[in-house]
Length: 144
Figure 1: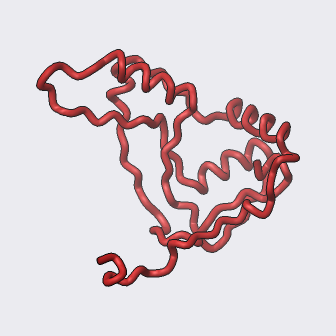
Figure 2: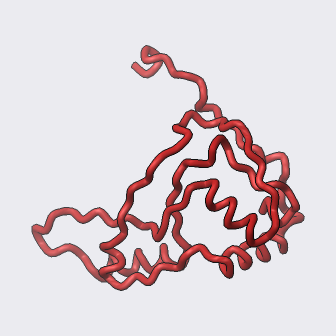
């Protein structure tokens, strides 16, 4: 949406936070695969990670900027989180069941940008900059 309205892509802090992504069609396919492949009676619980890829926020912003020519704007991170993280997640169970993941690529990013442009009149620009109420330290006694 930021690209669609000509707003710089917002990256908080270093942008080194890793996030998981999945296309909505792959989400539906994962549910279908999970239902079609129930565990055997007595089988241990399987953890099915419903994601198809991970990206650092700054790498994703660079990918979008390279495709669209958008500017990247680095801002102080309002969240109380590490500047960098490694998100280690595996979706091999779904791959083994037959998932063929949709990957973030130039075509998909252009499609998303074009859809956002159709609805640019609905964008509330006052909501673009992130704020967080979770940045203050909570006293332990307040949790008891």
